[in-house]
Length: 204
Ligand SMILES: [Zn+2]
Image 1: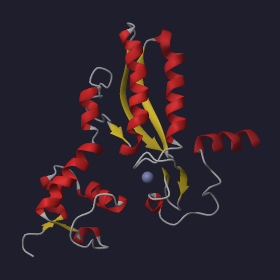
Image 2: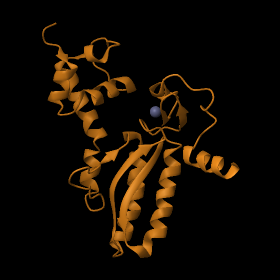
Image 3: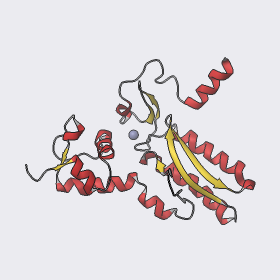
């Protein structure tokens, strides 16, 4: 058993952190060959597993996207700079948004994505654009937001906001275990936290 690789060694080989590897295992679509320990620190890999995890880590870093969309995705740099902080299931939504930025850019306007994140299960995109097209880009951003609340952040399949007790994420039935036990007070009741918060304020 001496040729097994610990999760710490795997993270180092894959040039990433232990938490991302543990998350990939938790998602459940790419698993190590040896039986998975319940304690993530005890998870082990074979050398053959590393290559499969390499592909998965690259997918989650949006490596191909960054090459294909280098003209419209210009990541912020410097201290505190953010990247693309959401799951690979939203790649299609991301590309669609960037395709529209590209159209505007080709028409001579400034339009570029700087970074994006997931918050309350929805995709939030941050960009720079010329004032003349701000309304159009804001509309595209709204479309991406709406689609993200209907697409699993892990796999892109039809999904809804899943409410656990400490976290909410937009996930399909196959991946909803990632939020833990559903909170019956909110799960299936709040499907868009921003819209729900607005309603609460207006109702008050
Ligand atoms: Zn899914």
